[in-house]
Structure formats: structure tokens, C-alpha cells
Image (tube, rainbow, N blue to C red; front, side, top):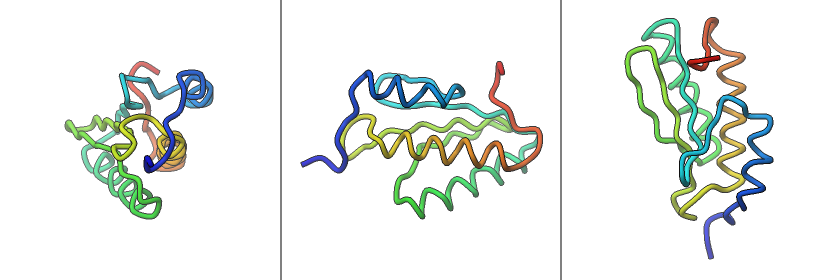
Length: 107
């Protein structure tokens, strides 16, 4: 029995309607955030780490100076589940309520 049931393509698309900064890449949800400074990027990663620990659901995180990329997939289920959409919403809340000046590249 998987950790959490996989979502259908339609469920994923519906879940991303309110998550415009996220895109689907294969079996992952991906968002890149441009921070105003390296310190702000680290602060954002720290906040996401705390939220991830609380939810027991952890994104892959790449930091490239001021640019932070979050990649969500439920590894135990081998794909995208409701837990990924929930964590995407949490990350969105942290970005919008966090450090001033955060934005998704191209937005």
C-alpha cells in the first residue's frame, strides 16, 4: 500500500489552478523563487525546513545564490500526491508572507 495515493492528471491540474507559480515536471511539482539576497534565500529555506519537518513531508531544495528551487514528489508513492499539493500551498504561504521582495522568476 503506498504512503499516499497518487493523484490523477486531472486532480494535479485542478490542484495547480491556485498554484500558478508551480509547474509540473514529470512526477514532480517545481517552483523557483528569486530572493533579494543570499541571506533571504537561506531564511526561506529555513522556514520551509521547519514546515517540512512539522508536516513530515520534505521537498528537494536547490539553492543557487538568490534563487531557490523547490521540487515536490512523494517518494514513497513514486509520484505526486495530495501531500505535495499541501506542501506547495505551505511554501506559497511562506513566500508570500515571508521576506519582502520574493518573487517567482518571470512573474
